[in-house]
Image (cartoon, rainbow over all chains, first blue to last red):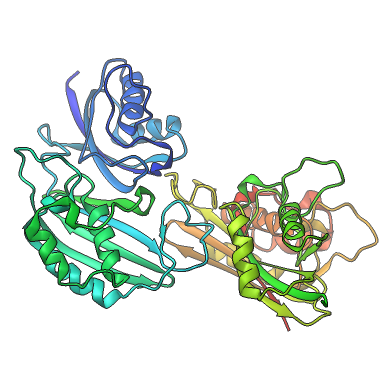
Amino acid sequence: MSTRNFKIMIQYEGTRYQGWQKQGKGSKANTLQEKFEVLLTKIAGAPVEICASGRTDAGVHAWGQTANFHMDTQRSPQELMEEMNRYLPEDVAVISCEEAAPRFHARYNAKRKTYCYRVLNSPIPHVFDRKFVYQVKEPLDVPAMEKAAAFLEGTHDFAAFTSAKKGKKSTVRTIEKIRIAREGDEIRFTYTGDGFLYHMVRILTGTLLEVGQKKRPPEDVRRVLNGKDRQLAGPLVPPQGLALMEVRYD
Amino acid sequence: MSTRNFKIMIQYEGTRYQGWQKQGKGSKANTLQEKFEVLLTKIAGAPVEICASGRTDAGVHAWGQTANFHMDTQRSPQELMEEMNRYLPEDVAVISCEEAAPRFHARYNAKRKTYCYRVLNSPIPHVFDRKFVYQVKEPLDVPAMEKAAAFLEGTHDFAAFTSAKKGKKSTVRTIEKIRIAREGDEIRFTYTGDGFLYHMVRILTGTLLEVGQKKRPPEDVRRVLNGKDRQLAGPLVPPQGLALMEVRYD
């Protein structure tokens, strides 16, 4: 039997998990990677490792996380998907499974990611979406936030917008598009780009929300970008509003 | 101070509750009515009873349950709503509050109710809607279900479509409209009528689903109506797919 490479798309509600990435040996953290590796190893009868497009933080959701793994199996992708869904908890599901080229790698080959941050902009709590939105009761100025977002689009050093410690790794990224749309009493921030730094989407959103609340003018985000200092940016907003929507490959 | 009559609209996720209606004294059932009466009595400093448009069963949700209660208070409806929302658990919210005519009664004055039953018609589970849909993996014939639904619209004796024991109370009801709409991988059954018997919406849906699965022809529902026998109708589908959407008053 030869080892085959499978590409899967995964949905999960992040509420119960300490993020995607498994922790060190002996850790009791409840992570999605660990859940999948335990399950796939059981299915294969031999150790299987899974690699996702990137980690998501504790409490962050995914509508279209993508991952790949190698497995010796005679099963069809469809059978494999059904078997995974039979054993996965109800807050995780595999929504597609296909055989990929032998060298396909979910992280290295990811070209573009889309994240969505949902803000409930209402004084009234929302029962059904409560685990997927961050509530901001005060009115928000969408045009001002759009103006600020335009300064963030393009290729920049986003050092001010990450919680990662300064290291040798580049903090330059390209944001292709930031879309801010009001839908009913909700405001959705959609970010598409080639990759995002640790906490970057949540700090970008926290900064844009301060613009929306008129705590800083739209132009101020230029100063933050140029300053490259985390202290200049807005707060890290909570994880439950965030979801990884889509990962694109060539 | 004179007693004022308040009309409120309530949303709740029914998952954790044994339905709307409070149980007998000493019962430890977790009901929404009990939650509201304890809270309102605390706010008023005197016993308050609350009356909803009707009971919802254990596990059934509400987007627009309506209720009224009398209270001696100087608070504005807005203040009262905020105070309730401050103390309610996150799976319950008051989304509107207004002062009503002294004789307004949420149950007696209800003219029309709309319920929605959501079926996930896909072999793939849905992570985010899992608490709000009933999954049917096999394909469903929507036009056949629509044909069957047309026989159910109008004024009929729905004795076959209730779990209530035969008694003196009338089982005649008027269903104004049954709408069946496919939206993506979901099929939504929307029922509007003057009132619904115990378990009626869930048994109607269970029967229509058997038509959709070609287990019975559309015309068969006429035989079920005429037979007035619960044994003739389809199964009671689970509560989590059901939500009370709206209650209309004159």
